[in-house]
Amino acid sequence: MAYIGQSPSVGNFQVCDAISVVNGQAAYTMQVSSVNVVPETANHMLVSLNGILQRPGSSYTVAGSTITFASNLVTGDVINFIHILGSVLDLGVPSDSTVSLAKLTATGTKDATTFLRGDNTFAAAGGGLVFLNSQTASSSASVAFSSTYITSTYEVYKIFATDIIGASDNVNFRVHYSDDNGSNYDKTFRMAVIGLGDAGGGTPVYNQETSGSGSTTMNASSPGNATAEQNNFEFTLYKPSGGFGYAHYIMALGAANDRMNIQTGALRVGESDAINNIKFDFASGAIASGTFRLYGIVNS
Image (cartoon, rainbow, N blue to C red; front, side, top):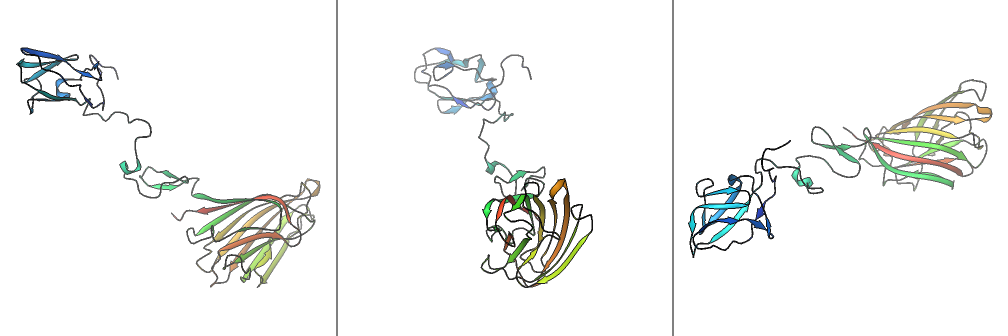
């Protein structure tokens, strides 16, 4: 806003240079670092004369950068200090990078993955998805997310896989589970897979299996390995560390001649099994290319 007269020195607290008293003189120039300063008003100052704080308006007045005491000072008087307060009723605008977290009443964890909400709490960014890890396959035997990432921190995990292509043609794509961080992929589960698409004439394919090997195929029809036969999927894992873990996924597979398949599956892990490692691979041959991204979903 505009001001009539002197613009307030908002939050600009200054101590004036020492002033030598002149015998028989009442008016003195106020300076900071040898530069004249102008207080907003006499009420925005602390003035000590001979060790006694002076009352603004009656003990002294201010005009511009000049302070005038109510009576002439004499030899032996001491102006102990003049402290200019600025506008003490207005905090003004803090300088850049000067407001610390300790000045806030916010709760929660402040880090690169969170933001400050309107209720003054820190929450995960990205609509509740917290990015945990990304892996890019390049002639890789498998891609696994270990116990570093699959923990009890989150009740739900999501894996997004894009542009997955196998080194070999017509080979099943598989998922494996472990509760000892990959030393053994031997968790029991039951899984159902169903597929629809135009690559096989549009006939639904259904497969249900029980396995004790810790792995199962995710596809009802095997993907190819041509550039156009990319495998893309979203995989959701529920309560991996709490027993009775569940998972489901939806997969889009490209096929020759611009055809495609959509396939989906559901899985239930044994009730006493706590999953802390999940691995993807092809039944034979490497993962030639593709990217896997793991996210945790905040619990509240």
